[in-house]
Image (cartoon, rainbow, N blue to C red):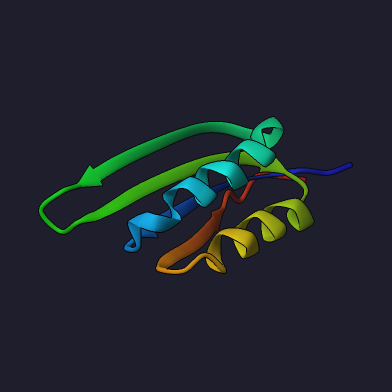
Length: 83
């Protein structure tokens, strides 16, 4: 199955959603290459970047689940690698 490399940029404005975000990321742990989280205390938000390598449908499902969390925004950027 063909996979794609992508980065999910995640902004968490509702800190009550952090536990569910972590649970979703754990659910997809097999496709996660790396994760970086930056707590921005001055603005009371968290900034998370998530690098993944997975089929497009899996990346879309992951992004969709994260985006449905209250106070969480996610954007996905795909690498333009040859297929």
